[in-house]
Structure formats: structure tokens, C-alpha cells
Amino acid sequence: MDYFDTFSHVAKMVTLKFLLAISTVKQWHTLQIDINNDFLNGDLNEEVYMSLPRGLTVSHFPCAGPPLVCKLNKSIYGLKQSSRQWYTKLSDALLSAGFKQSQADYTLFTRGQDQHFIALLVYVDDIIVAGPNLKILHQLQDSLHAHFKLKALGTLKYFLGFEIARSKHGLFLSQRQYTITLLEETRYLGSKPAKTPMDPKLKLDKVQGEPLADPSQYRRLIGRLLYLTLSRPDITYLVHTLSQIMYAPRTTHLQAVHHLLRFLKGSPGQGLLYSPTSSPHLRAFSDSDWASCSLTRCSTTGFCVFLGDFLVSWRTKKQPTISKSSAEVEYRALAATASELTWL
Image (cartoon, rainbow, N blue to C red):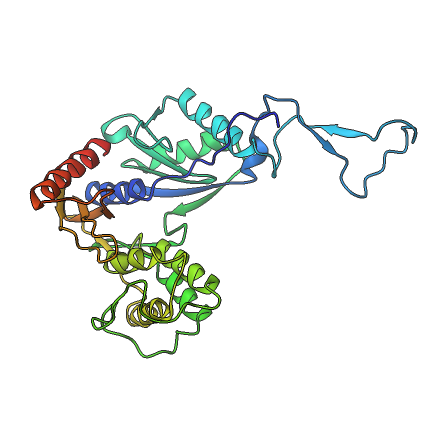
């Protein structure tokens, strides 16, 4: 009641990888900022009341009459409006400071040019600022600190489960600790490593194997593996194939997940390397097969986008209709590529 919309400002992962790639090529500084109690900063546009907190007594009011309530002057955690109002508060402060908001990703803000350029990326209360001039970045930190209580975490090293390591060879992005934690919780940390993500002899369909008595474990594993694909394109195909069977998984699908966990044991630190010698030019590749899905006979379209030598975006998707010829598949592949480049 009494709210119009609700959302959290979450940066797109392709925007994060694109910003890291650009920062590596141009040798920008990257800093990380964490906002303290971000949802408490929002101002409410509606009248919102809450019951008195448990244990609070008001002695100077008579006990008779209706129960007392509190009127909120600012947002608090638990309100449907909190995330929206925090985003409004932060974006208004950035726009008033001269930043421009990206129309492709509303969590990306930019200001200035050349040596005065600043890029700022927001993921709820975690902020990345990047630019060529470290002094200007620190000035921006001080300016934000005047509006909000924050923690200056220094050079970007760990962000949303991603580990960012810099050296003379460039920037390396991985989810090593996330992978090790997953292997520990599934008790596969001491398993024998597998050489490939998938057993080539295994067929994944809806009829092989027995239905799982409790599919909840399978679904939790797939959910965690989906997040791991953000830095591991080598497991993307298998994980997305297994995710299509989440409504009725079988023993063969769980065996494929266990084989994948053994593969991750052999390379927990695999990730993406961004070299400073790469060129800052966009390249995109797209392809489609014809009726490859044995279950639906739908064709699959895939694309990948590079910034120089850096892989920043990739995707495969089954087409919604069944193609009757390979020429029709090729046409849809070209349309998908043009759409992605327009979005970027």
C-alpha cells in the first residue's frame, strides 16, 4: 500500500566487465566505495506509519484509546520504497554534481573528458569509480562523503564475489574464492579433478535416468553455478543446458553437475585476463545452428562481444520458433548481432 514501484539499482555484469576492460587498456585508477546504511538515506514521498517497536513503552500517554504508531520521516530497511528512494537520493546527488546517466545502464554515471574523466558504477550500495586522475577520484570520494556516510575501500580488489588482481600483465578477473566455497559446501574439494566440463558419453534429455526424489539440492546448485558463469565462459553451455531441466531433474542431470564440480576442482581460479596492450575496438561474432535441440528441435543462436582481445559479453539462446531452413537461421543470427551492438 502507498507505493508506486520498487526496484534496486543493480549494475549489469556486462557493464562491469566493460568498465574493467576499458580501465585496463587506458590504465585508469579504480577505487571502491561502500555506503553505510544506504537505505536509511532515502526521503519518503508518502505517509508511512509503523507499529511501535516491541518493548518500547510510552509512559506519558494514557493507556486508553487507539494504539500508538510511529510516522516515518525517512525510509528504513523493510520498506518497499527504501531501495527506490535510495537510488533517487544518490542519482540526484550525482546529477547535481555534473554527472550524466547512461541510457544503456542506468547505474553507470560519467563526467568530464580526457584527464578529468570519471566513470562511476553503482550496485545498490557498492560503488566503483574509475578514471585517469587519482586526485580527482579522491575529490569525488570526499564530495560523496559530505552527502553520505561511506567507507573508502581503496583500490578495487574484491567486488560482488569477483576477485580483481592487477599486475604488469594486466587485470585478471576470477571467482576463485566463490568456487572454493562451493566445492567445500558440496564436499567436492577433495575430489579427483575432471579434464572436461561434461562427460562426452552422457546424453542429457528428459527420459534418461530416474527422477530425483528431492530436486531442491539440484536447483540450488544450478543457481550457484549460474552466477559462476559470469567469469567462466567455458562452463556456460553446460550450466544453461542443465538449468532448462530444473522443473523435473533426473539422476543423469545430477551426475552431470557432479562431473562439473570435479572439473571446477581442477581449475578453481580460471577467469578472464584483460591485457593493457589490447586495442579499444569492439568486435562481435554471431552464429546459429539448425534444429540442434533434441527436445524441441529449435535452433540456437549465440554471440560474443570483444573489446579488443577482451571477452566482455556472451550469450546463447534457443530461438522461440522452429526454423524450416538454415537460411532463416542465418537471418536471425545477423539480427541478434545487430541488436546487441545497438544496445552496447
